[in-house]
Image (cartoon, rainbow, N blue to C red):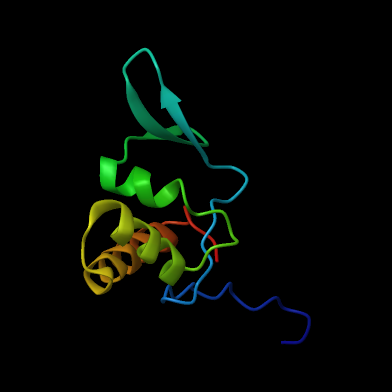
Length: 101
């Protein structure tokens, strides 16, 4: 079976992952409804405030560890707890194809 393309590998999010949104997914503020939305092909997702805070920092430059440190400082919370929550959130989104690493 030569010449076949192997199936894409599943992204495993960890503290070193540098997450980013793929080009087809946009995080936008809906001013009319005063809420954040993720615009995907033929879909509109409404993330909660925690997810928005994380997704706004997913630029492909910062690692999960760096995102957790920034949010821990901003919200005066334990960085390990925040990092674990971020990994769980981003893994769920990555499994659905909404986050790349």
